[in-house]
Length: 311
Ligand code: NAP
Image 1 (cartoon, rainbow, N blue to C red):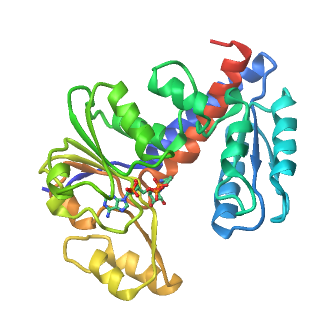
Image 2: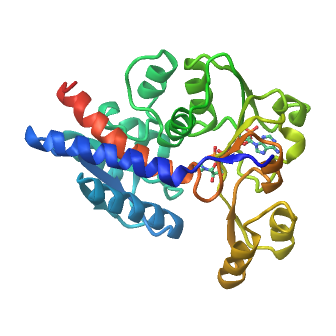
Image 3: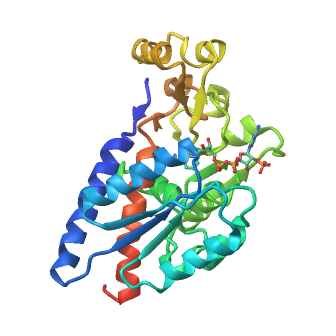
């Protein structure tokens, strides 16, 4: 039986609507949460992400501002900008878009963001809050994964969860969130032995690897929930065929047309054939991706409430 497709676009829209309602309620008491997005230089992918974040902020009624210093910015200059944003009361959330140009000390910059305004949840203080189950700001993509599970009625407590990937921004926080919700969690990475076998233990399998279609059906226990965090651009025809050429993939006609027109398509870390074995699966695009921005909006409102002591 084909897997249930978990519609991230729909879940993200629900969250954005809830955030918009909260923004309205806060406005009635004279508070308008504010988000500052900092984009250094001209990375085309980052520019697309930042545009999406600013547009979404406007849609839910947040105050937002964008800072776009030149590529040649120094670490000290960026630290001065962060210090200014930390000081300004109307700014509740500060997001520094990564990657930063090589001359900038990214770790120093992320450490300089006031943890109370750290809507990306990357500051070690927020990492510590998450691992000790204290209230704090949780990274957006991992928080989005948990929202998909919750809103799709997928139980987490007592389940075997396997996370492939151990990055600070996805793999580790997802693992911690699953653990905090009482899953039995295994974290895998490039040195894990017998990866398919370990993955087959999972009731919930999260792939955050960055390799198109690496998770094939051999990695998946029949009926498991598979969350595909990967976003990979496929440009080679042969790779396209490997991923989308099989009879199993129902959407290949539309995808092929778009691939031919644009010369590329987005693929997850999970091979589309997994839909034949999994019980539930997030698509790419339209799965975890849309949740990231929705959770950024939610985090900005959460930061505004926490900073002002509003329940
Ligand atoms: P990352 O920092 O490159 O981490 C990748 C992880 O995958 C590492 O832990 C690495 O292991 C592991 N890995 C790589 N090759 C492997 C292999 N052959 N077998 C087992 N493990 C392997 O990537 P990331 O930032 O976490 O992102 C992961 C993916 O999610 C990317 O496709 C990214 O574009 C996507 N992403 C999506 C969103 C969204 O909004 N949906 C947000 C963020 C990221 P080692 O630690 O041993 O090197």
